[in-house]
Image (cartoon, rainbow, N blue to C red):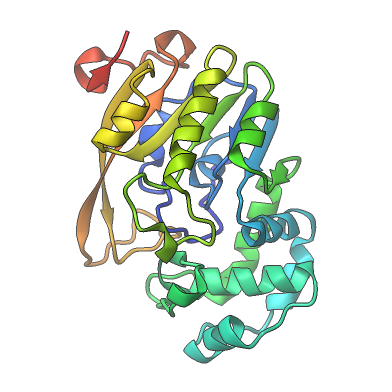
Length: 289
């Protein structure tokens, strides 16, 4: 079942989903150590085992409540309107007392904040009836998300613990924070420079028993850190800044067009693919045998 992510998320891969999914290898165990909005997981078919992890405990709590108690969350949000006043209330005054109330606060703020930014000092009102998911549609969003999350393992661990625990043969999709980015503006848990090196080291250590695809900013530093990788592909896609991740492609609005440019790092080749998508003339921008 293909659905959109339930959340708005800065740096999410909604617009790059097709490019990513074309490169996914055959797998029975799927893991995202940096789940974020989970755009790729929600777009792809579930496999036998699925594991979503993120250091943001509030995000994981919201996913867990949606997974196990969707009707309770729907009831808690019933009657809520998307207004600046309610956004201000949930941001500054609302004091959640339990997991359900924490999920209510997180969901409301995420759906009504600009770009889904949840770092409170930069969590600003960003809702619009013409391009945001309206509150009357939130219940349907929650129910379809809950269905997709059935049987999915949800954790809030350090990425190294997740990778170390991944079973042999698992496939990991990794979307870490950019190497060159001011993360403190967007995320509740920033990624230090040492974490980027640590991520490369742990992936290299497990390269013979796991397959993985990593998305990163196209920078000399990242290329150097992953100079040991099998394949580094340059990818580019279009996106519209004024649109949100819950829109359908049939909706057309004026907005600022821009391009996403990243590199995809893989430790596998054509033999792992569901189809022969690795055309050297098209796919390989940079390859290390």
